[in-house]
Image (cartoon, rainbow, N blue to C red; front, top):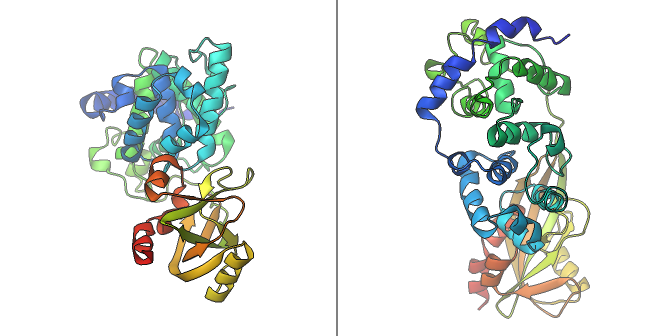
Length: 359
């Protein structure tokens, strides 16, 4: 039995005030203004780990460069990665292209208007399939993301752990029974919007402007700071790395990362595991085949991935010689044509400073 079955009378009161609120003040977004399936799909993939404000310019640049699914399917990988640069989670854009090629081969270039079929495409899970199905095709299926889970947990004053897959599925199954048949996409977007704009995380909701305040058990019981419940995440693994800003004849050295592992196949700065002292750093460059004319510290930095934290030490060095795999490119070419993940931004942001000092 669905643990939220007993809450259906309360849940059934949500659609009317929620949609009324959504109709009076929802954000104007390009994928809402023109909710064609490709746009909805692209926006949902971008928004999985990115706020709307940050994702919108990426979305607009992406559809300008690749306006159709056919364009996405045919795009060179370097162009694809450059368009995604800064969003992170690069496997998502790779899966986006894999799915586009399946759509071209098996569905005549049109996303299937089918909740189950969408989930067979690379990179499209249950949530994304629900969002695309309801928003782009008007299919009455839920789209349960973190915002929705938080809103429902508070409205119901639920103590259930929202990180558990069975809880997500049970909440989705309960939503199926209250979805307005004529506006499932608007309903799903309204719930997500409420979580993003009003029913905020970390105990800071704006209950005074919430359209569901009169229904909310957490508000009535002063429980919003304690809900939702979620099992604590595992501590991130700490890795130490040394990275090099290498300069040669006004150019900057970059290297493609291995085809497996974190940031696989992307361009990055040459580096080595561990934190190296200055003399160790120079020796490491000599062992690669370089002659070091000058070197200095580029400082310490850190970058946080989902499960890993990089603690970084950087060195800037002017070098002569060559090393297999390291190519030297003009700084403007680097900015225009190469996708460098934001993990390296603490050092690439210093290129002009160090390059100016070297000339």
